[in-house]
Length: 207
Image 1: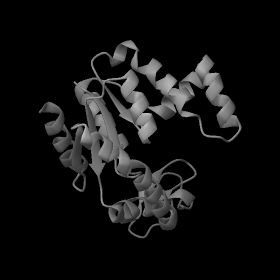
Image 2: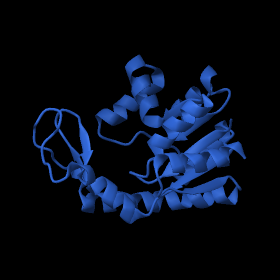
Image 3: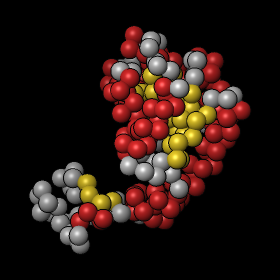
Image 4: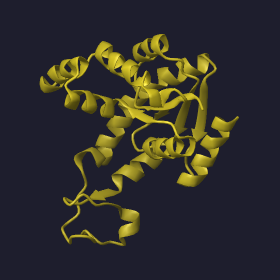
């Protein structure tokens, strides 16, 4: 198994594919959010440093995030490979990562933006935690589990989704070019079913 980075816009299905890869190849699925939460909970020096920035409403600086990622990648469960999800997000982060890790492959889960707007814009949630999509609700507006009224989250509203996608594109297109230049990029057109997309991912990983 390889050391992999997953690239993909919000709503592209990165998390789903990462979970399937992790299960199929018995490697850890690593997200910076999980690393941050764990280090803050455990009160590690870098975790406490990160908490100061988060508590102040500021972004955690790259050097702190890189330090946390480097420590995580040295853990025993990473020795046979891993999947990095949501990191790196910028060229400086990618360059810093290259100094502390050997990345074999960046897989770009590529979904047309209008498909993502439809996916996220059609999502409806309930206060009890249940999630639905309008395509499966047949006009129903209440939660099947608890009967409460469903609502659309602010970050799922079409104008918000389009803004998130614009930011993603500005940040990530340079990363796609960065890994392409290194000969490490594989782009998977991700418009089929979850299983169809995973079959394409497996082809890339098994090649």
